[in-house]
Image (cartoon, rainbow, N blue to C red):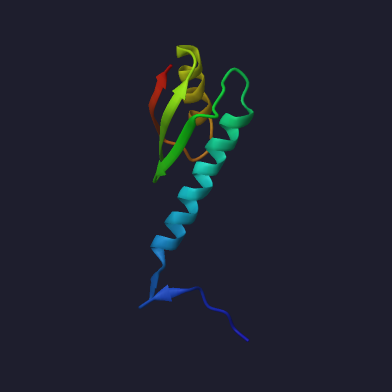
Length: 88
């Protein structure tokens, strides 16, 4: 039996692959924030669009905001981090 790659009219199924990549990138950043020292990321949400990451939510200090950006930027596959985390 021969298995062929899933296609739609000969084109790769882009949407499903892109969603899987975006989900994997979001998970990688969220997991890194969860285990990173120097930040309580329990109120931080991570959203990916392509290779861009958006961080939303709140943390206690400005230092945690900077730390969240640094952690997100260190993840392979992340090209840009838009940090919208509020202090408070």
